[in-house]
Image (tube, rainbow over all chains, first blue to last red; front, side, top):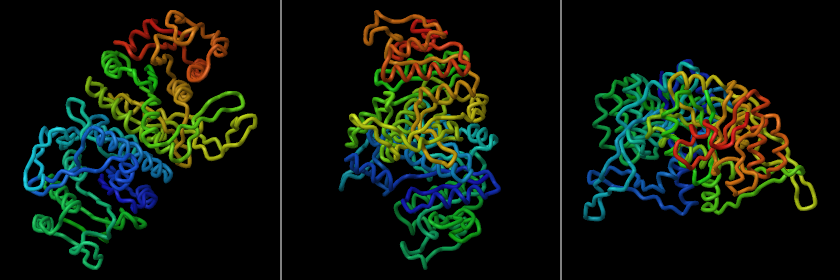
Length: 264
Length: 264
C-alpha cells in the first residue's frame, strides 16, 4: 500500500493523477488539499483568511466556526467530490472521505493557541484546530479489501464529535504509522524540493533520511510544514518518501522512479 | 435494514435523530437533503435559485455548473459532515457519502429538458440534472458489514464520471429496489401527511398502498415529489413506508409505531 498526498494548488492535474492511479499495481490511499480553491471561495464569500503565527514561527489557519464551515464545504464537498468524479472517469473506484467519517482521523482540539500579535503574545481560544492522534485503519482496510480507493481530506473529528481543522501533512504521518505504510508520494506544484525557491535548476534529487533535520532549517512556510510531516513520517516507520510534480503526466510513477526528490 | 430519509428543513433535530439511530436494533442507511441551508448559502453567494417547470408541472432545480458546485459544497460538504459528526457524537459510526462515491448512485444526465417559459416551451440543455438508474449496493453492504452507518446525499454520477443533481426522493426508490429494502422512514417538518397543508388536525394516519395514486393528485410541489418517490418505492417492492416528524424526540421509532402517516 502507498499513500499519495496531493497538494491544493490549482495547477495540479487530476486527470494525469487519475490515469496514473488506474495503472498502479498497488493499493493506494489518496490524501488531498484544496488550498487555492479555498482562498478563491473565501473571497467570493467575503471572508478574509486569517492566520495564526505561533511564537516559534509556526503558521496555522485561524479557524472560527464560519471558516470551519467554509473549509468543510470546499475541501470535503467541492474538491473531494470533483476528485472522486475524476478518478471514477478513469476507472478508479474512488470513495471520498473526511477524517470525520468512521472517525478516520481522530484528534484532540487545542484548547488554546499562543499567537504572536505584533510584539505581544496572545491566547486564541476559539480556533477549531487540533491534531490527529490516531487513525481508524479498519475503515480504510474495509474499503481497500472491497476494491475501493479512499480519497481523504479534512476535517478531522474529536472523541466528542467536534469537527476540527488539522494539518494534512502531519495527519499523513499518523496515517502512515497506523497503516504501517512504508512509501509516501507527495505531489505538489514543483519538480521536487529545491535549494532555492522557484529555481528548478536547484532541485534536490536525494536527501538522506538521517539528514532531514538539517534540511528543515533551510525551508519556510508550507514546504517546512511538509518536511515536518515527512520527518514525523520517517520517525513513524516510513522508509521511502518521493516528492514529485503534480502537474505532469504519470506524476506518481515518475516520482516513484526518483524524478523528483527522493528521501530514504 | 431500513432506509431513513431526512428532509432538508432547518427545524429537523439531528440530535434526536442520532440518539434514536443509536438505539435502533436494525442496520440503517440514512439519506438526507439540505434544501434550506442551500438556499441560505446561495443567497450569501449572491446566486439566485432558478427552477425549471416542465410542461406537466414537475418542478426541478436549474443546475448550471456554478449551482452544481454550490450543491456539492452544501449537501456533501457542510451538511453531510455536520450530520456525520452529530451521529458520531451519539456513538453511531457514520460514514458520509455522495452518489458519486463508489458510483453509489449511477445515473444518466438528461440531455435536454422541456421547460415552460411563460406561454412558450423552451429546451434547456445545460442543466446538470439526471436520474439515478442503479445503486452500487456493494459499497453499502461492505460498510454495513463493517459496522458503519452510511449517510448519503447528492450528487449522483454518470458512467462518464460527470456529477449530476438528482431528486433524493426518487433516488430513494431505486436504492430500496436494489437493496431489497422493505421499510422506509421519511422524516420531515410535519407530524405526518395532512389533508390540508399546515393543518396538523387534518393529519392522515394511514394510506392504503393501493390508493396512493388517488392521493398523488391531492398534493403539490415537494410533497407531491415525495409521494412520487414513495409510489415508485412501493412498485419496487417496499411494503411499509412511515412518514414522521423530524423535529421531535425519538423521531424514527415514533414513525415506526405509526404516530405519523403509515403507508402499507
